[in-house]
Image 1 (tube, one colour):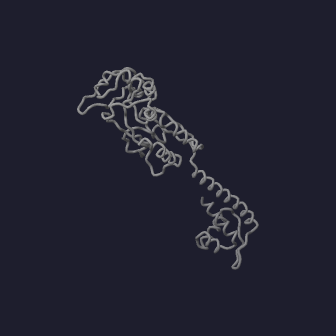
Image 2 (tube, one colour):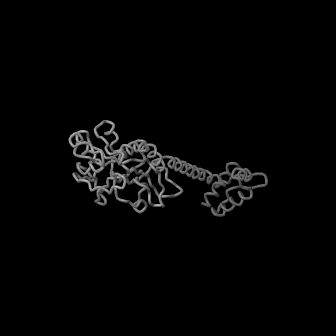
Image 3 (cartoon, one colour):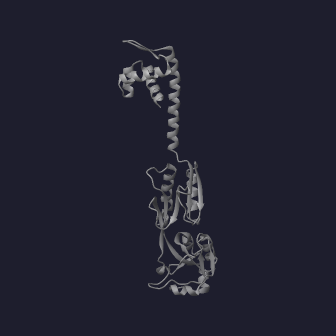
Length: 295
């Protein structure tokens, strides 16, 4: 690096023909320019300038060296500009862990990829608690409040859990009006793939103990249980964003809403640090805009 600095000083002096002028352009003294040139000459073992009290001219060796130095500096400037342009474009691999659900994430990430084609998405859908740093993830999306203080977080949106069923099912089995009525209904449960436990239905009256609901059908697929409810196989317990379009179309009906007490959030988590890579920063902003409809 010292040689590159001396080379830059030499190019300035050679092009201007003055130590004073070179120093002025570089923001250093003429004496500092003279000493830098002297060190460079000593290192090369040749004289680069003819010096007199009135003039400063390049030697033959100095003229040839100036041409080479110009090319080197131009290459360095071009390389720097290329790096600056690269740094200003979101690109490179981006590894993200997501819950085992398609909605609302699949369409959003597809749109993100279309907008940023130079980012190579690596998406892993899992409900297990991943080690973000240890497993090399750039970010994870998870429901509930973040527990790791070593992670930065951005809330993507809120959702509410609902009990839903098809109009055809309720026509055959009747509408439940109190949580206790669920004991007489066909209930479609979700089993967490990572723990094997069934999801709790937080639908109850004040001070009522948790109900042991009928286990008519069990699925470890969120989309699967919604599909079964659409087919009239029973009542299921699902997040409002999973069933919003079916509630709007009338294909599903929500029941026992006054007793549904479970709400939660989706959060985007990433390793804390002062520098957030551009590819991750654009993902944070994009998901905040697009998944905010959960709120």
